[in-house]
Image (cartoon, rainbow, N blue to C red; front, side):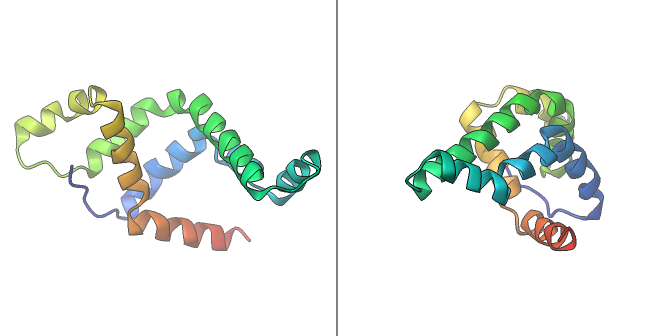
Length: 129
């Protein structure tokens, strides 16, 4: 599926989705204190083990909170997918809801891989320091 360029109006639904996913919890999962705690628990500091622990924490947070933003996520995706005809536009939600899971996961990856998405987070993270 082709995605349009992300613009300023996309910030608001993105922030709503991220809040429901648990951005504060995610920040807690990757903070320095958590990494030090994991390192001290693992006596031998193995970066791969620590990285895996953090990834599992992040995945757990996202999985636990994802159902809370289902409607918002579908609406956001509908708003950024380029559709050429009106019939396809009307069926887009149903198509998204019935998309094979691997294709849906790839669509999400495509969205968060967009340069505009990355740029937004770089600016947001820079301003939060």
